[in-house]
Amino acid sequence: MPLQEPLAYPDKWEKDMTFRRIATEEAFIVPELAELFHHISRTNWSSLDIAILRINYRDPTGPRVRRLLDLEEERLAEMDREGVAMQVLSLTSPGVQILEPGLATDIARLANDRLAETIARHPTRFAGLAAFAPQDPAAAAKEMERAVRTLGLKGFILNSHTDGRYLDDEFFWPVLEAAEALDAPIYIHPRCPSDGMAAPFRLKEGGIENGNFENAAWGFAVETGTHAVRMILSGLFDRFPKLKIVLGHMGENIPFALWRLDRMGGVPRNRNISLQPSAYFKRNFTITTSGVECHKALAFSLDMLGEDNVMWAIDYPYQESGPAVTFMDSAPIADAVKHKVYAGNAERLFKLSPGA
Image 1 (cartoon, rainbow, N blue to C red):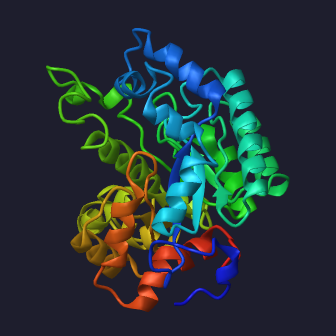
Image 2 (cartoon, one colour; image 1 turned 45 degrees about the vertical axis):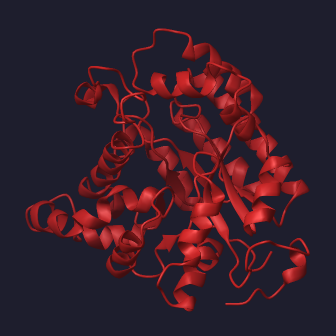
């Protein structure tokens, strides 16, 4: 679908602009959290997350930290070069969930303020998802309301488990009540498997240098997919039927497991739920393409979930913009569907102004 308001964007793009491109899983960090991650990376913390913190934050002047901190120079230049109209920004994993509750609440509030300030300077280029500290659900709910109603942020970012606990735990229900009341989605982003499921991911030669096994290669999907399936099979979506959840990485493998989830975990076997797992997934979840540039996986996901339930994402700066654009530009799907994946579904879910 052609852009309706091309003057909302730079006069010249190097990429074809037949489609508006909204990238929906794009990371940033604030200096205060980067400094905390730097200090944590030098400790003997036993969590699997430590490997990623050591790679990314041992050198606080390294290229990954630089790109996460930058919101207005290198990032915008790359967006212009690759024809990306907008990034939906969120605080990078593992976010504030590894901090003690008071500090986590303070850092989340600070990050949300900084994010809103950046969006105010570039309202046609950025939208944002708010961080919150689920360690303190009451404080989290207050910050979620402030982030949406006062700051104008479009949803929330959660990095899977918090201290080994998942959103089906009633402890977190104030967070879910807030999200449902605000009609704003929660993007469940990966982090490494929790301590309770970590042992099989501790490869003999060490983690990230041995194939990314505990993180992006496999652990992320196992952890985050497990979180989402727990929510579905627990009956949570009967309690919160209007709650909207976003999963990246082509749905963390769940679309490919829906038939078996219905067969082995659905009604009538599972008395916790009133619908089949696949019905909840299609009703309450939207997935993104972040980090999965595979046309066959895209085609399967569209066929299984429907064209309204898939959004495009880059996963910047962990993935490069160019290949993600090429992947979607060349996808063998109808232009009307491509428009929905590239922008239309994000505009609807995050309440973004079309063509703005």
